[in-house]
Length: 269
Image: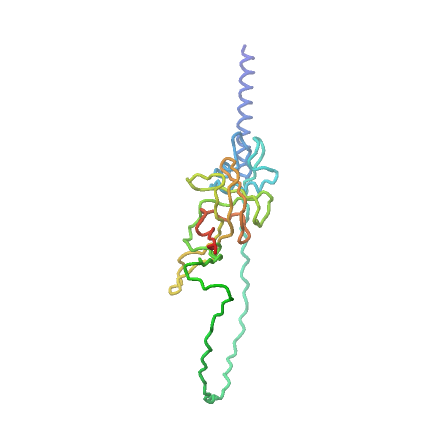
C-alpha cells in the first residue's frame, strides 16, 4: 500500500514539473518574440495583446509569411512578435577641419548711370468675343460651371485627423493600388458599415504654417480615390476601388463619402 502511494506521489510530482516546464517554455518564447496560437485566438487579438493596437495585425501577418489567410490561424502554430524595424544606428559626425578664410577685398565697381529712356504707353486693342453662327448667347444661370479638380484637390484639417478607417492590404499583394483593385479595410466608428456604402480614401500631406508667425497650424490631406464596400468578414471589410486619383497605399485612411463633392454633374443643355 505504501509503495502504491509513493508511486502515485512520484507521478503527481512529474506531471507538475512537466506543466511548470511547459509554462516556462511558453513564457520564454514570448520573451524571445514568439507566441504559440491558442484556441479562439485571432491576429486581431494577438496584436491588441502584444502590440497594444489591434489595427497593427497586418504587420504580424507580414512577419509570418506561412499564414496564407489572415482569417484562418490554427492552435499550436507559432507567431513571431519581434520588432519589425530596428532603429538605425546613428553614425558619428565626422569632424571637418576648418581652413582659414582669407578675406578678399571687394573690387571697386564704377557706377554707370543709365540714360533715361522715354516709354510710351500703348493701350491694348479691345477684345471682341465672336460666337459661332446659330448659337445664342447663354445667360449666367443657364449653365452650371464645373471644376472637376475639387473632387481630388484635398482639404486642410488638424494634425490628429485620422478618419474612420484604414486600408490594411489588398487581395493581389500590390504596393500601389488603383481603380478596380480589391482592398481589405478596418473601421474605427460606431456607425454601421453596410455593403454598398461608399467611402473616400485620403492620406496626410504637407504641413501648413502661419504665413506671419511660421507656426504649424494644420496639415493638408490629399484625396487618393473612392471605394465601395462589397463584403464583410467579422471585423474586416472588402471594398472595390471605384476610381483612383493617385496611387493608393497601405495605411491610407478612410472618411465618409461626400456625394455633393464627388458627383457634381454639368447641367444638361
